[in-house]
Length: 613
Image 1 (cartoon, helix red, strand yellow):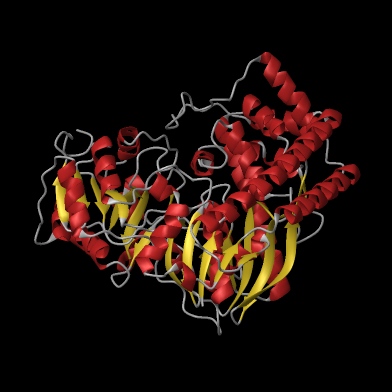
Image 2 (cartoon, helix red, strand yellow):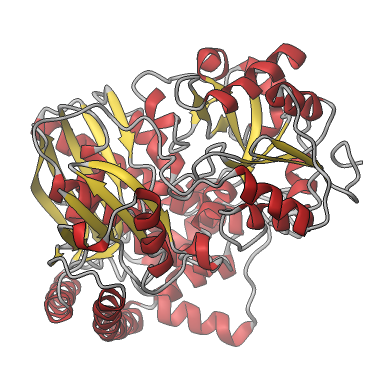
């Protein structure tokens, strides 16, 4: 059976072609339109999928979409918001006054600089009038409840309208492409649960989904067994860890749908204890295995915190509470189900530090996070679920599921740009030599990675011995980050570089969780180690990506380090490159020293070779 999976159109629209549970092609529309997190029907991605696989539209048996009809979604939203009204009518959180006084007492003065901040204790000052309003609308017992309900109701109205809009766009797009297979809609969290479990290879696992919103829910708990998933519990929206984290991301001055990773990095510089009790007072933890968050859509509360307390302390507290709540849920449901493996999906599970904490929970023998954990992965999950037959299969080996390009297309892109190129006899050694000499190298080769992480085929590589690379290379690429670049490490050297890998090695092939670094890693690749001593590695096996693996082998031969810096090949606020033309343009705009485009190597005509110099 051939199934076309289409992810939600509101953000990161993605198309996937799956046959009998095996992914043939998957790519986000953003890679073709060059509009980051593209909203709208993924027409170009669908056309690319059909062309790459040679499948005629008439051969598609089913089309699946991870939301119900608009009127059904509207009814689920109203039901969820009515339950929130009842919760707020009956729940009385502790008084905030004494908790704020204790938090102020715990603040300390910092002098160590924080990359990306003007001063280490920087706050989000907004002026007297706005800050008074934030205090009243976010923390006043009477007013904040009413503001919270207004914001929830407003969210519900907008969401219902948007569901109707995207439903019309979906149906029009399918008709335009002549795709007449039956369109099957599903409630949202089945798609997350299916991709996490079916891609994991585990016979039996606890299935945890956590996101912002999906069909009345903000997450779910299930058990995957014998190739099927049974749901045990749902976390009703708006008691959403995704919304919880979106609020602080927005309040600290970042885009909530795009920059949550910056909060993860910023949190390591702060003290979570300053505001921990304040935030925990907003959580009803009286029912084990469930999740209730007070006034969760009231952004004025987190804005009040951000105005009064250092950004790093606010970020640290939100990160710590996220980890605590997620781990409590996993611990409870592990005991209830007797499961020993955990699989995760949903936008919240892009939080690599939270994933590390879940991996460290007692009783977790193995963890797997779906590589495209956000809504961009939902179409693939449903398509796998709809076409799956038989029991559990081996876990996915890679996610190189996007397009690949011919040598002719590569040469044309190079020549159109007026560039010269060479074709080294041993390209891996050539790249390693250049990196060891201090060159920044971009690599575009093979099939494009599916999902948010660059996994070597659309990556920028550099040696990790220079910690300052996080400043100057980010500036060159137009980025502002609080977390260091991630490392890519030889599979064979993983235990020399990271602690606590057991049960997480396969997940680490997709850069989906952090680990504590060994002293060896800290000494040989300090640029990849965060201030808290962790890193988010990609482990590379020779059989998965031989050319990429060989670059690391050659680099270790030269330097003694089995790791390199790996960051996505794109300019700031652009999608990861897709085509040779995209690669050449980003290579020139970023003043990257060298470009490995398939078998060809291009030296930048103007870059200052040798890194920062």
